[in-house]
Length: 456
Image (tube, rainbow, N blue to C red):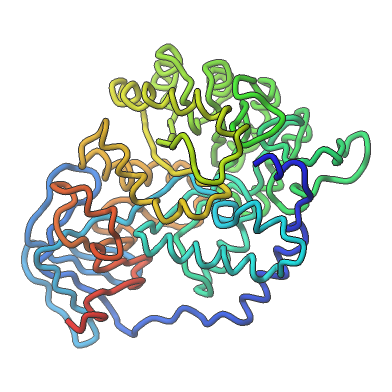
C-alpha cells in the first residue's frame, strides 16, 4: 500500500473519456420480452421475519412485486412462468460498504505507465457485473469516483447493482482521505489540487466553509449520502488509527448541509473519541467501529445511530506490512464488536469494504458467512437484506431509486433471488451463487435464469 502514497495517480484524467468510450462500444443489456413474471410453488423468506412461507406464488409486474398468494395466479401468454418447486425466494442481497472503482483495481493497475485508460475501466465493468451475479442487487458506495459507473448501470449499458453513491470521500488535511503523494503540497499554500481530488476520489476540506462546499459538490453530482473521515485508518499513510479527525464545528457543518438536502452523514471511525464526537454532531451512521467500548455502544443505541461494520481478515496476499501492522488492533477489536452490538441490539448493518484487492470480490458471499460465529442464518440474511435496506432508506428523497428494497412484500421493488434449497436451514447455500442462485432478478428484470440455460 505504501507505493500508493509515493507514486503519482495515473487515473486522474482517464475517467470520463473511458466511460464514454465504453458506452459507445458495449452492447446494451437487452431483456427477453414479457409483460409479467410469476414464481410458482416457491417458499418465501420475506427478509424481516424468521418464518418461511411454503407453496407461494409471486407475481412481478414492471419493477414491483404485485401479488403474493397461497393460491395459483392466473397468467397470460405474455407472462414468464418460473416453477420454483424446492426453492426459496429471498430478497436480493445488499452490501452497504463498497468502493466499486477502487475495489476493482490493484495499485499495480493504477500505476502502470503504459496502461490504456479504457482497459482499466473495463475491469471496473467486469467486477460490477460479477457483483450482481453474486446476488448483490444493491450496494452503498462510500467513497470514490462512482457517478458515471452508476449512470452506465442505470441506463442498461453496464451490468451491476443499484448504487447509492457518496461520491468523493471528504477528509481533513492529513486525514484518512488525504491521498496525496509526498511531492503534492497543500493547495491552500501552494496552489494546485491533488491528483486524487482531480480524479474524484476525495475532497481535502479544512474548516467549516470548505466542508460545506465539499458536501454540496457531492450532493450536486447526485450523492445519496455523505461520507466523512472522522478518524484514522489502516490504508492511509499519514494518520495513525487512534487519531480523531475533524472538529465538532466542521463535522456539524457537514451534517447541517446534508440535512438541508434531506439526507445524512456517515463517518469512517474506529475509536470511542471519534465516534462520540460524530454522534454529538448529528451523524446518523458509523462505519467500522472496531475499537469502540461498551459506553460508546450505549451512546450509539441511545441516539438510534446505525453501526455499519465488517468482519475483516488480518492479511491478504498483497498487503503492505505497514497496513498489516495498523490493521491488527482493528482485527482484534471486531471479536468484541460483533457480539457486543448483537447483545445491545443496536441498528446493525453489514458490508465488505474491499479496497485495491479485486481478488477479494470473488469471496464476497463467503465474507457474509464469517458472521456465523455470532449470528444465526436468519439473523445473517435479515442483516444483508431487510436491515441493510432500512439503512439505504435513510437517504430519503435523495435515494436514487424510489421504492422499498430488502423485503418481499406487495409494492416492494422486485430485487429477488431464487435459491436452490432453504438458506435459513443451510446458510452455506449463499456462498455458491453460481450453483445455488437459479434466478437473479433486479428491478423486475431477469439478470440470470438458470432454468433457461438448463432448458427447463
